[in-house]
Image 1 (cartoon, rainbow, N blue to C red):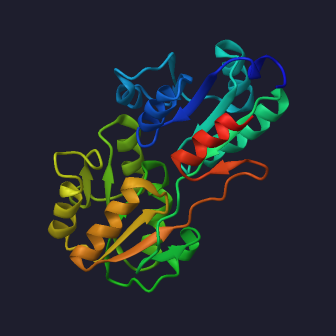
Image 2 (image 1 turned 90 degrees about the horizontal axis):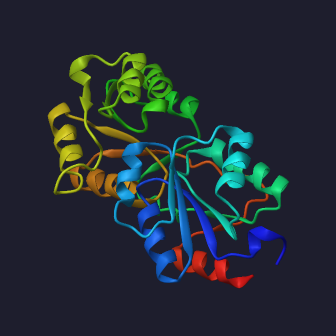
Length: 263
């Protein structure tokens, strides 16, 4: 044991709505006291009724913001980074902040899905180089990346379609991308009683031939593998960023729990 952060059975979990609630339940079952950090108030709703000691809402602003949060809410035996695989900036900042403070840090990294018939792309330039002339392509990605990837789709000669979250940030990203109103759906992904029903309907209504999503792992990527197979569509995946150098990672809940208990 090294220092006060190791003296208590407390965990700070940085997560969203995908993996976070499940991890909270399992950590609590194993008698860990869990504090949670999420970016938005909408994400916080996923933790309602769960046994969390504290929930903090708002983006942590760089290394300094992370250190301030740890000083305010700590000490913690562990910080667990279960943020989205494409939220690379926060993971890099966590490595620096935790190293400076001597705070043990562990990354929960979703296991990669088998590629199957999907094609893996490194970046927007690789997308622009694809032979997509005249294809109708659905950008099933986060709003932050929509403008750059819409431009890449057009450079490839394809016709872009997209989705926007019903939020100011989501709508602003869609407007920056320059998608025509009839090429844009304002929806919350995976919404509804039947997972993927909205996405399936959009693909049929727009006559989509190609779908682009991120190699993020988890239910969203699994959904697109299944839908594109069912509908006979092509699937392109943006390659998932590698975790920061020096960050210890685990790929499943069992390995995470074993690692937390080891020291």
